[in-house]
Amino acid sequence: MKTYGGHAVWLVVVLFLLAACDERAPLPDRLVLEPVGFDALTGWGEDAQEEALATFRRSCDVLRARPDDASLGAAGTVADWRGTCEAALALEEPFGDARGFFEAHFTPVAAFNNDEREGLYTGYYEPELAGARAPRRTFATPLYARPDDLVSVDLGAFRPELQGTRIAGWVIDGHLVPYASRAEIEDGALEGRGLELVWVEDPNDAFFLQIQGSGKIRFEDGAVRRIGYADSNGHVYFPIGRALVARGELTREEVSLQSIRAWLEAHPDAAPELRAQNPSYIFFQWLPGNDSAPGPLGAQGVALTPGRSLAVDTRFVALGIPLWLEARVPGAGPGLSDRSLRRLLVAQDTGSAIKGPLRGDVFWGSGAAAEWLAGQMKAPGRSYLLLPAAVARRLEEHRDP
Image (cartoon, rainbow, N blue to C red; front, side, top):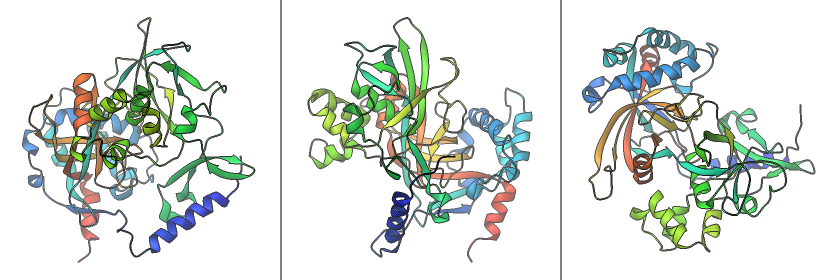
């Protein structure tokens, strides 16, 4: 087993503890759950829950392979879910009464962040990029595999109050220091190490692929391979749309995937500097399977379902948990009115920009329509976790009077 210098790690711990003692700091994120009835879920009777049931069954394949005492945070342990998963997996398609299944096995619980009821819900999609197996003039931007010298540290292993907090870096002279930033990597910091998986045409496309976390690579011979998240360089994610707003280039209301991409394409000389404002950099790996799967593999290790899989902050919501979402989504194209989204999804993925108990990212699939929805969705919303009845009863018994 490798050992690493600890000075940098303990410095980060001290900084976290000092921040916690700062009276000016906002309340730390805290998931609060309140059991309710299904009648509290607006639109519950109109949703096509059979789609969510098929998605949940894929998560159950993973959950039931874990030990009974594996923790799911506020959702209990795997043992609490085993019977429900076995019942779901015993059903045969087509699912005639998916709604009845969820009502019989679950209790909805309203989710709060301290006393805040609404959170932010956005979307993501699976982009498709043209790629080449070797570099050439028109394919000059590499997508890198995870470097062997990247060291990931779970600070929760050192301090329980830091559970779910991760840093990454590399060891220099016995000390863990920050890994190369986006600017340094785009400037060639990893060249010559054989880490290139594939070369793509446009550095902006590579940038947005990193934000989405996975995608498809289509080669000139027609072959298609899925590529997905392997790790990050550990730098804190910064949304470059925020920088454009601060500079007066866009208003807050104008910020979207589409408007940011248009700015980058219109300012090719300034684009590298803007991309570098986000120092976080994603490393990739080839994913198993092929183009026939409904979606890429999410963090739970199952294929994502368009419109039914949700990326969450796993510090608060465990992967595999069904979640009812009430929010809004943009119309299907420019100029069309927003519409209500009232739908049962399953937490199956995560992402570096997804922070907080009421933060979620809806996976919309691939193609132009999915890209539009993902780029435009940015709405307040309310969520309800669906928990096995026994877990919900324990929550009710331990609620503050």
